[in-house]
Image (cartoon, rainbow, N blue to C red):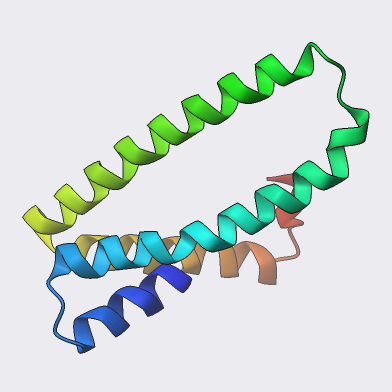
Length: 109
């Protein structure tokens, strides 16, 4: 995953676990911003005036929840390291690979 690659890259450059995780999340900001801008360009002509308030509130809530999630994840990594996160990623990837190879349509999940 992108996050694993950037965290491992950060660690290989002698960053601390916290610095590497924060670096990884910060690298996602330009990508997420570009994706949001592209989506806004596509949907802006279809929005009604009352939709703007919902859009603004949704973005504020998403930002707050995202910031809390990043802080919690970085705190988790500082306390426990990458070991359990790595196990989770391997198990989750194996389950997805099994579902894909057994013919399940992953878009239906």
